Image (cartoon, rainbow, N blue to C red):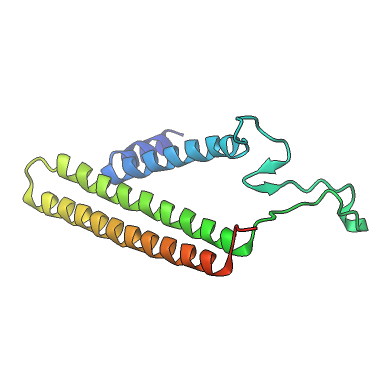
Length: 157
């Protein structure tokens, strides 16, 4: 038991280990809170049958062919794909911001060491370039999705 505690203490003494632990704890908290907020309607009331936009399967016996209670997403496939693209680009944007923040952390803890400052500049530059690419991809995909929706009359009666 003492040996394990020393291994954990030694591994957390590294700056990258603390960063990874912070990211892991933050993600765990976000994932623990997210389902509760996604299950709410505009009025703020949580619905029992709606979780992350997909209804829960409530058929009595799906194996016997009782599918009356089964209801999945009813949105158009193009709208669903657009939502998936937007969610993926949003997550990539968060990753780019985290990379930039890691670079800032490295710079602040460099203590005047030129080698670490150059490493931090590389992280920051990579994060900014990644963010520019992601914002460009977001703008292009939004333009294409809007034009595709207008051409195929999605969302119009």
